[in-house]
Amino acid sequence: GENVEQHPSTLSVQEGDSAVIKCTYSDSASNYFPWYKQELGKRPQLIIDIRSNVGEKKDQRIAVTLNKTAKHFSLHITETQPEDSAVYFCAALNSGGYQKVTFGIGTKLQVIP
Amino acid sequence: ETGVTQTPRHLVMGMTNKKSLKCEQHLGHNAMYWYKQSAKKPLELMFVYNFKEQTENNSVPSRFSPECPNSSHLFLHLHTLQPEDSALYLCASSQNFGGDTEAFFGQGTRLTVV
Image 1: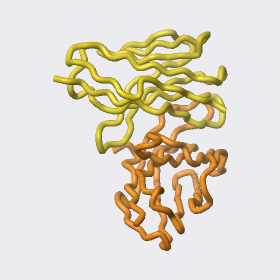
Image 2 (image 1 turned 90 degrees about the vertical axis):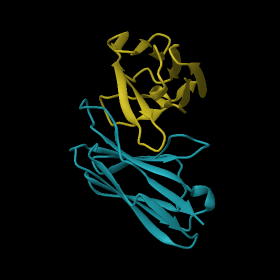
Image 3 (image 1 turned 90 degrees about the horizontal axis):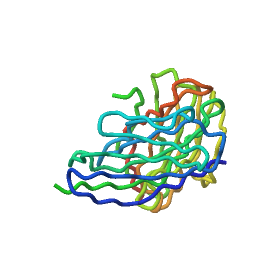
Image 4 (image 1 turned 180 degrees about the vertical axis):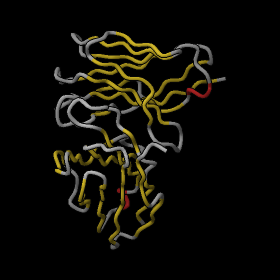
């Protein structure tokens, strides 16, 4: 089955700096890689995703990169703000069959004002 | 509101009690999931149902018993739980076979076992 590793588990950055979270996956059949943000006391929600046919995707201050050969993908947040403080989960799955969303262990991001 | 509703939001139960958690999705999805979220394991997959059939049981103790009567409803029956089972239980749904693969989560049930 799929195994997703995520690091770091905690990350503190100064407001305005960039934050990078990295994930690796094991199943070469995985073709969809979403990132979820979970604010304190709330449910996880999708913030950005990338499919295996592209190498990079950007949405304002958030970008995700994918290296299929190395089986790793990363989340980049630029110009961090205090409201970016949350737990971020990466995930990997094969969207073409029975779905089992495998999540990473999560990264607790703290943006220090 | 994401279209995935969980009840109850909070539950306190004794170790000899029997209770059930309910999840309902109004998104037309055909895959539903139970996750356990605790300090030790932030998002731990428990069960997966695809087209009402259980396709994954992630070595979950038998004191947790899932039920999926149709593609819109998912239950988690609880009996003789242990204090270490206290956690947030999240339900999620998504679409199989190339559909919209985003997983939508419910707000969770905060379970406390005393």
